[in-house]
Length: 176
Image (cartoon, rainbow, N blue to C red):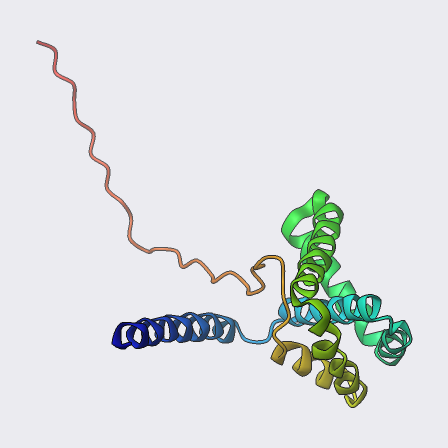
């Protein structure tokens, strides 16, 4: 009994450490436009998978209609991100991301079984209550949306140039 409690306590501590660690690293990044675009795209995909799985496409269409301009702006931000990160292969990488996103979210739905729709349909009511793009972004960031991979969405830190110069010494090769 005591060992089971100990294992549970250790597992909980590890889980909290990992949770706060990833939250801290995300928070240290701030709210970058790319991070917001990934969050909103994840939410959009989650709602699409829910709509298709639970046969509520009309609710998904209402969401898209209400936030069309925001969704288009976030899609544009994602396009920019992938162009900057992947150059000529940007479209392929972006398409792969969208496909993987839908796949991991569909898989999560399959694992949930019959309770999936019960768990997810409330999201449509929640997004319907949102007023604007800022609310949508905050909502998407706060939800635990499954993503297929971690993408670096923070700007790389500036590299400081050293003012010191290196001395190199040359050794003369002596002939014997």
